[in-house]
Length: 151
Image (cartoon, rainbow, N blue to C red; front, side, top):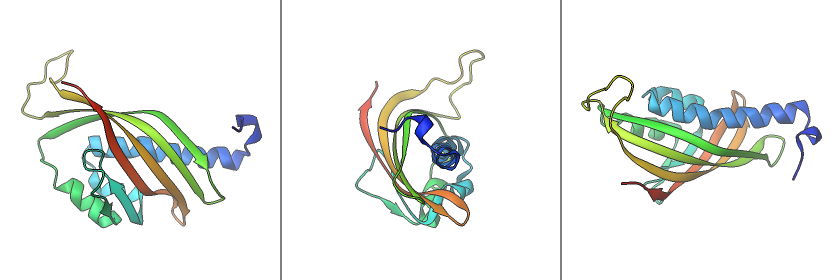
């Protein structure tokens, strides 16, 4: 295992860029800014939702389209934890992270100081492959799977 002191400034910047993709992806989905997933995935990107890991969605356009089909009243909050990024080459990296997801509907009353009552949590993991493109780092392959769920 490398220590931070053994990384160059460029390598640390590359690791941070990939880390940011993971956090940004969750925030974009939670905010229903699905077109912005184009800033996260490569043109030929692959995404497999944790709830249907054997049904990968192939291509940036198809990923965006699949999220646009989500019910408009669905409200989600992703917590992304234990993010680890490892450089595998000058322009490639791999990573993994844990997620916790709570879901509810916009019709559920918002209670000041509490928010909305939600279903969950759903716990899972992602395995990612990243590549450096002309536009910066992007996710080429993101595969999720559920590990636990709450009542």
